[in-house]
Image 1 (cartoon, protein in one colour):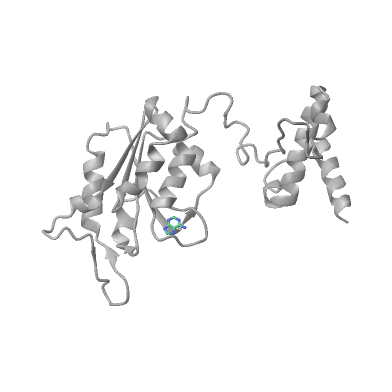
Image 2 (cartoon, protein in one colour):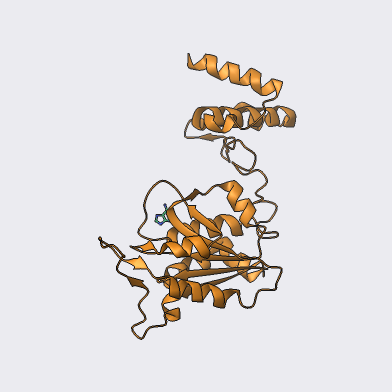
Length: 248
Ligand code: ADE
């Protein structure tokens, strides 16, 4: 069972996310436990402050190391010796999150997320406490919480038994290296907008071929950068030449 702790000043932000849909089902099934926790409670001063003015002056406050160090120590106390928790700092300066990182984190037993708000982190947290520094994209959020939610969502759905066969993640875009082909459901003719003939033909060989081709087309048109990382078959190379011609 994976254990997920989240250090935050706003634990209630997580209530909805952890109590709905697949993330809730995963917890109910015993695949994961969630523990959003206010790190203010670890502050050792009587006003329970967690931040302070930056040395050298300047605007903004800086998260103090003490509450974060003590919280992580407390949360890792019960870990068996062989469990090495991943301590993940959310920040826009971190390594950009992707599906590969989600797959890597899904193999772990204990994740601890540290979410800052408004301010920076004392650098000693980065240097001596954390194992990963992650950004969810090149934009600045008001805090790390939404980033932690994104990462947790993408990791938990990969845990064994969480998605049924129908929702299997084997075919996910980014896991396969290609974007997914288009999908259609009934009716075959919706207000004059028709489903491609091949999909209603019943010919499974042709349907599979159409899917491979449209998956490649989508990847080529929307995310050509992904194609630099894969090796193309002769069939794919032929299609790619065809797509390029169509664009001329
Ligand atoms: N905190 C603020 N901005 C962030 C981002 N882009 N990713 C992760 N954490 C953040």
